[in-house]
Length: 348
Image 1 (spheres, rainbow, N blue to C red):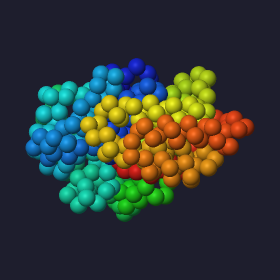
Image 2 (image 1 turned 180 degrees about the vertical axis):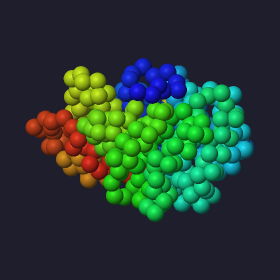
Image 3 (image 1 turned 30 degrees about the vertical axis):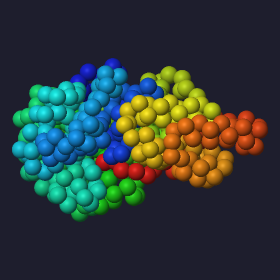
Image 4 (image 1 turned 60 degrees about the vertical axis):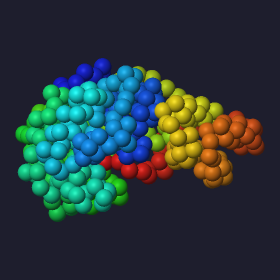
């Protein structure tokens, strides 16, 4: 098994994927508490970093309880990417720097960022070398299987990344044109893992802990990266960890435990954000994810999506637990059941 380029405490680590608007410090810390072995920041613009944009730099901050952590950056100018890597290294000192070659969003790819770089593999290699020139930290990459179905060749892309100096590679096994539709092709992850000498992480369609275990056993990847499957169920990491290690799987939280996790997450966001109203409004999406699959969840989500302060959330949860839905003591909501519709939001 290839060795990871930064210290990890387990043989097969489970990563929290970088996701715009989701992989912020409070959620990263929560996922670490629930068993994520490694976390990554949401992807950040190299130009924003170089120009020391206040909003961008604020998203680079992390605490010691988040380590090991990678900072993910994107851009199509090798020099600018190297300069951004230098600033990140000098000021923030993460454990590694990851390059985003996977984001399919139009506003990113129209500037050849994210998966847009996959149209030009010479550019991909130049960007990797540019970043490596600006840091002593390990440089890693996250890719998709190709720009389009016609150019889909993840092994060739991955080998070019390895040759340029990438020390770890995560593959979201969809093409850019697929966006988040269809299915991730896990056979491609297996082929890339077999072809490379560096660690390969599998990503895509991990909705449950059982999916994470199945990806690992089927593809022989060095680690698994969970993105949208973590929405509203951060305990997916500890469950996946147990399955991979062959130890007893902890029970999924019951409804009260689910609400406790949501409130813990909310408290962490309150401590982190400076704008209470803005933070509460932004947190509504998380609240919706935490209650998916519960009886009466449509009405519960309607109430939660109207909150303007975190104080309202606890009252809504209290009323639900005291309601008719709970008179027979609802059973635990399993990761498998709750994950089915937690598949929205931006990732790479």
